[in-house]
Image (cartoon, rainbow, N blue to C red; front, side, top):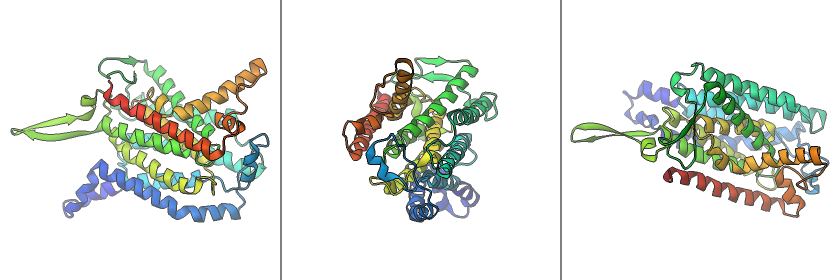
Length: 377
């Protein structure tokens, strides 16, 4: 909205030209989302307490978690509100990347809302069944990418190549048929959504890596779409950042930078109340939605394979669940004391804050490795 108003009034109010710059709107988006969260969470926590919308804890979980029963949950709902309001204010609403990111984010948020609500209503940890959850997730992402590669969002977005980390984009890329890439992209978004959901099991555990990953994607999206004009001897030249860094160039993708900044701001606002000991939990409404957001950042910015590094913590958490499940089914034995793997470390005697902080440290290391790929191509 601010961008539209600035274009409407900039001839009368020259200072409004500043809204044309992605960097300015990125800072504004982060600050707005943060302030909305800090302002509304105290009210939200009281409301959840009054309505007795408290966390349902697994009976087979670590004993230290039993004290968490009744802690207000569904805090991710306020993250989505902060994110949506901020994007409407600071985003370029004509940019298809913005809408392609927000549609699965909100759709997965609705799915997570019903999952959380049914758990609270029925007083158990079941909620939406696994088949129902995957059906909705694959359906939403599949329709989105199917529409993308049928040209519904513009032919320039239909890049079906996979770029390999630490290899120059102009040297090597895996060119897939559109139907195979659409399936891969759908799987990537659904996988990241569920991986973040598996990670959301300790105070502050999931939101920390989400903030870190969103920060990396903010940088990657900006660099993939940024260009600067300059004049030399009367000639106008264009400096395209992606050409210099030898990374995929994605026209218009820089407009996802304010969206990523909104995720960061909303995440920090939530973390203020979710840090140990948590006053509110994210719930599936936040975890499924934000995982979908990160998945869309990865696909639209052409960093699908690099996301294995950026979201390494989430990938490890999801793999630990898969390994545990099939090991028990096939061999009758468990690999970990409990899955997801953060519970395994708790069972080994690690205090909850230690597990969380070390996972954050690992996320930072992975983020630095991912960013290092920009100059190692």
